[in-house]
View 1 (cartoon, one colour):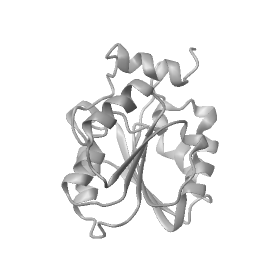
View 2 (cartoon, helix red, strand yellow):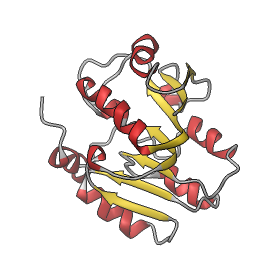
View 3 (cartoon, helix red, strand yellow):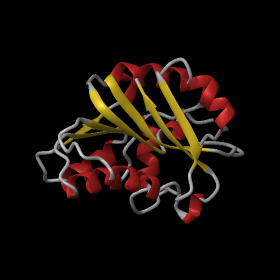
Length: 191
C-alpha cells in the first residue's frame, strides 16, 4: 500500500481522484450543525477536504472554525476560496496539530487513516478537546476491500472509543447522503 502521506493526498486532489467527496455538506452533519446555538465555540474539522461543512458553519454565523488538511494543493484552494476572518486554514499533519476545541467534526477523516492509527487518533482527539468538548460526525459502518477509505463496525469502534471518552453514543444514520445509505454510524462523544 502506498504511504498515506502528504504526497499521496496531494496527488489525489491534483488528479481529481476524490470519490469520497459528496459535493455538499454531509446531511447528518448539517442536521447537527443546525441545532447548535453557540456560534462562538471553537470548532475543528480535521482532514477537511473541500470543506463543505466549514463553509456551512461560516454561512450560519459560526465565529471560530479551524480546518486542517495535509494536501498543499487543497489548502491553497481553500485559502483562495475562504476570505473570512472566522476561519483558520492549516496545512499540516493532524497528529502534529496543537489547539483546544469545543467541538471536532468528523467527516471522512477517521476512515482515511489506516486502522493501525486509530488508537493514536483517539488519543489526539482527547488532547485537542476542551473539557466537556465533543467529537461528533460519521464513521463508515461497513468494510472495504482496500483503502482508503478503511471501514469497520460499531462493535469495533465501541471497543476503541469507550473508556477514552466519558460519553460514547453511536447509532445508525437515518439521514445519510444517498451514496452512503445504510453504511454510516453517527457518533456523538464527549471528553
